[in-house]
Image (cartoon, rainbow, N blue to C red):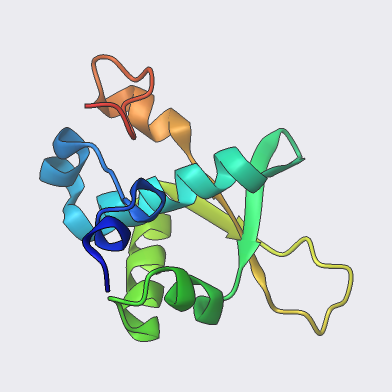
Length: 120
């Protein structure tokens, strides 16, 4: 693999050091990934922006983690109130989860919440 490919900014995963220090690198990295995905592809439902994804799809996007690790990180973020999930699918057979970030949680814990997920 060429150096340019290894350093390609399209594959860069940035996260806020303060958030990483507060909740841990894996959770901060997952939130940064979800935030950028919501910014690019989010759909508004019930006053929130959401994205939908399976654990397999997240594993394809974040191959350095196992599906089990991805599930554990997401469940932890939900339990701690940093994100929520639901099912907006048309078919009850479709178990794909929809995810949204609880930005209100950040406002409570950060002195300057403007853009703090990705800005350094």
